[in-house]
Length: 143
Length: 143
DNA sequence: CTGGAGCTTACCATCATGGCAAGGTCAAGC
DNA sequence: GCTTGACCTTGCCATGATGGTAAGCTCCAG
Image 1 (cartoon, rainbow over the protein chains, first blue to last red):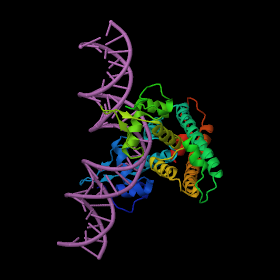
Image 2: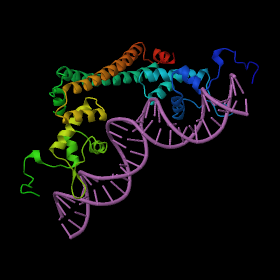
Image 3: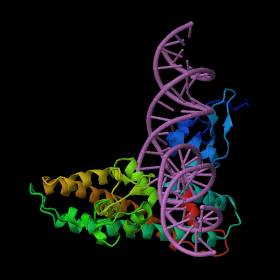
Image 4: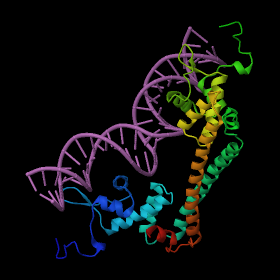
């Protein structure tokens, strides 16, 4: 459209289809559409024929989502984090509180899984694991 | 029906409705029905009017399922464990192998969650958490 | 112009669990 | 005997994050 409508301009200004955005963000195209549908992503621009178009700002957002997702946040939590991110006035205490709660949750989950793991490891260690049928593991499950 | 059809016979021979079985096993009535539907539980006896009736053997089975579930096994895995349990000829090595694989999986999950937790704890520790907007947590997510 | 890659929407599946609704049953108390 | 409340039945829908598939449109390179 404008005079610089060339595909040799700096990468930072390039628009891309969903596939490229997916590659660049590490989020599948499927999930990008999903995040749009649940309102985590703004509705992107579209070509005349309906293809989604993502700019650098969208990509930035996608990368944020990806980071948060990789740190175990749910989509609802990511939505709150995005709100805080976009709000220049937020007090950092709010962010800290939210993330601290998530950390507590993770710690609890870890504790639960570790308890299972320890118990099972104990049982495994006590099991001969040969061709005989005697098995303390099953005995324990049968209580 | 038979001569001892009295409700004062030993607890071990008592039949119970699903609610009581649920209480006694710690598995919700809903899930007991579900386990029946997916074939984890045999179809129980029914009263003339259609109420499910559980005996001590069923209860034993439910308790087994509950133990396994609490140790993080999926219903499919529980199905396999039940098969092994019922098969008097199984070699304990089979049980041990299955459970060992589950332990490995749990360990991996714990490692993942711990990595998240450690990273987040680091970020939380680095965040002032006051009324100012500066927040290394969001900075990290925004990358 | 054609073929293949990429895009669109819409629907279905997972897994373990809960909720709800509409209706049948049972036991206790009046 | 009748009412009431607790309990049972089935069936359907929802969760959350993700993948699959199908039918059809678009775009680009050869």
